[in-house]
Length: 402
Image 1: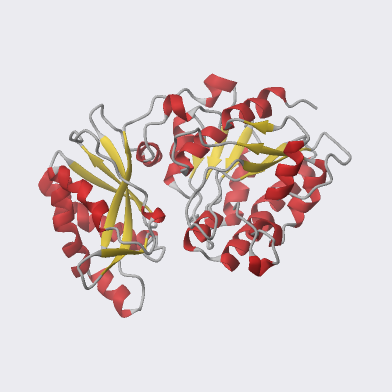
Image 2: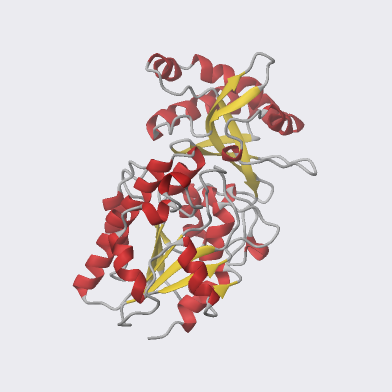
């Protein structure tokens, strides 16, 4: 949800412009911090940043995004397997034959529709490659492909959301280096074009799913659990397989919340209740909300403001109210894993502002509201500027005392 001042908002960021009454109540009595969640040289992805936020050093354990999603989906990776994230996308062919990324999410296609298309691709394009390729349906446009074959040296891919509105033709050349992937790309577009579901979407004026994008490749990581590292038991609430996979591999209870979509229409109430249920018997819970990030990728200002307001009203507000009703001491961290500025429509690795509220402390702490600028201001006058998410998590777990 982090961003830069917007001229149309009289210099406010979306976070500053959004209605956030619960955060506004808590922030003056909280600590405002800055944390670098992305190590130097790493791409500022949600995979790296969220591993960091949960107290891990990505430099030691990170092996790629897709293996984390495989863990969430219960897909076991063998020693020689490579997992890929598979996005269903919409591309537009230009007069010169080039392909432009029109929509990296295929209109935020629904999960049932996407499952039909992934199953069709698996049957028509992967089964003939028995022993080499397997597709697994996920949530909305986000799916998984496992390659049971080696990759050539230097093979690499890029995220589709970094290339909205751009010519992406050259990025598909990487797949031609692997016979099984080349077969998939030769076969798949025709399967999608002729699928009855796509014909219905075209007739209804919806985004056509006419291509797919493989990225985030990697092998299964080896990582200790949070209980092994910090003695903690907890849970992960998220709509997306990436975060749930991080939860699984870190030993957390990864809860599937019905109706959680990773967008503006997600089941906020269900996520908040699942978090509160976990807090009855566990030390902590991580609640992840994807909608502000998605709106940033799409460059949608009003929707991003709405997503932040919904986060305050339907996640932070109910959880804080119930913890106060229970009269239990609690600590609350509100943070972003990375910025997704509207003008860039992709991630950046700037240090993220954090709010750390402790119900056991009373009275004003800094008197500032939670915002990007205020976190920088507060960090200038304290030692609460953390060089890594791991350093912050250690402070949060071990050093933060009443």
